Structures are given as C-alpha cells and as structure tokens.
Image: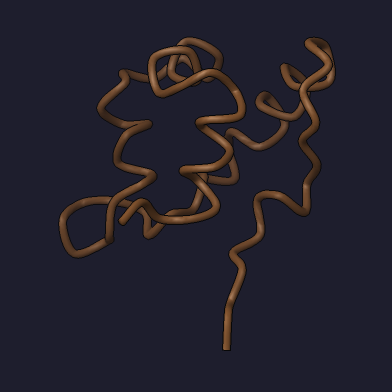
Length: 76
C-alpha cells in the first residue's frame, strides 16, 4: 500500500521520474518518499526542503496543490 500524502502528490505531479527532475533528485530518492521508514523511506512524507519547489511547479502548470496537501492525514 502506497504511503500518503507522498503517493498522491507524486501522482498528481506526473510520476516519480517527473518529480525527481523538478526537485533535482534521483528517482529512487523520490520513490522512497512512498516507503516506510523501516526500509529507508520517509513514511509517506515529502521532505520539507522540496515543498516550495513542488508548489511552485504546480502553480506554474495549473496543477491543484496546496501546502495542506503535504500534511499527513491521520484517520482515527
């Protein structure tokens, strides 16, 4: 199961390879955003260093994305 919110953000912005090119990382690093921390991932969190660049790209390309989309959703 893909981890949120990273999986949705990556999909919305065109996939792992495209997001990697936007933020200047190897695609493996971006893929790790969707993996549990126990296996080297980020537990579905997009590292904060990349939020502004991704928000700017989304705005320039008419893709709906807001800062709130980066917050983890906790379902009780």
